Image: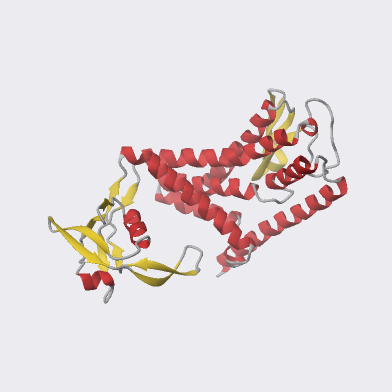
Length: 348
């Protein structure tokens, strides 16, 4: 079941990515020859709206083949009026950006539907007080509910943690204890911890852990929740890719298709909301990765068009060909590394 859901999720996200390219190309007057989900042998195809629509055997990607564009041989061009090659650099960039943008839009929509489903939100209820911490010294106790910090209401554990992290001096905590409201003043201290990338960082803390108490997201908070989750996912993936490229996180952390299948299967077991969360994250991932300036990806083609826009001439065919080959080598190298890491984890 998990494998089937993985294929459906990945194929669906690829479909919307390619649909973005397709609609933008048609809008710019470009003839789209093929719209394919997957690579390799065609399992099913039909002809509609002057395009061949196909589902192929290897569901690890997809493509929209426009007239005059051939990634396997960039020198093959067509100069008919309905060809990709006759469009201006800005029109081409619009077509190329449409795929990643579609992924970002789908991710935002998914987070919005998650918000409408009333996801559980971690409440600012203390479950543990660390010994000799500022919280312990000030007298905070298990089951205390933090209602406000310096007069600003906090409804979630995340809001509370953010307020503590941003504090410059002592803070005034308004707490609810056994039905009574109290005020406790304390000063957060810098503590060493790990971020989501396993890096050592220093963060202001007061020495408390959550109890695990949750509440349901209220309908008026739907948009703010959607915005927060979308921005967090986008920032996390952009940062993660940057750190991977600059060697700030180990390449052994890179995952491949097996990781996607396994994580989707785990999400399936946890319920539909977890599947939507994972699908939204993968959609943002696809959008970000396709914007990388690798010639085999949308970002690489955008790079060539920016060059043409600036210098008023196309890059030479030799340069385009060599960079495209290098891009495919990098892309398949990353896919191979991800698959190798997945197999290594399975064997551990």
